Image 1 (tube, helix red, strand yellow):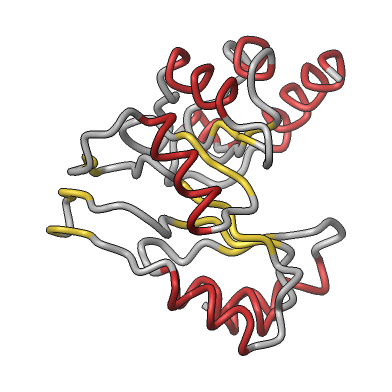
Image 2 (cartoon, helix red, strand yellow):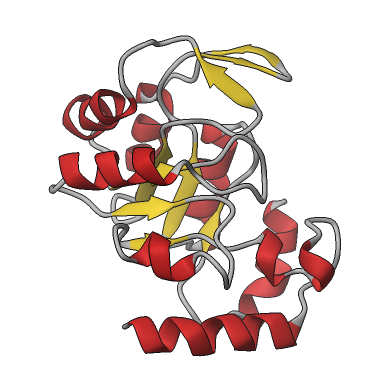
Length: 189
């Protein structure tokens, strides 16, 4: 993955991030050596997932970031993992508050249940109303039809599936979809 990012880096004209799925340490390592501005991953919590019980250790990737000299690389904490259910029964806003306070998240991400499905708007709103110290982003399922609602509460959003041909995660990026979406976002700024 590091080789892929390094090969693409000369083509990237904007700040970029890394997310090596379900592996916070690898994500931080790849981000640090490639000069990424941020890493997006699950850093805290315990989840029942398609991969079994998932219990990331936030301290290890945080130490790795420091040890690799990438202290300016931001860690974006997804607090409700896609394809997983939190075993922690605290309300999502409290889990977000804890991630900021005890794990020093640089931003909070709120996801839907799976890739391409939106976060629950009421959960997103609750987290946004609770967290003032760092930005809160919608992490999944944002599209041209719901971006106005999402941006009415969130500080930003992460887009993937909607930018693909026919809105299918596995398809290549559709430049026309990206342009239409960004034109709409420009009206919201």
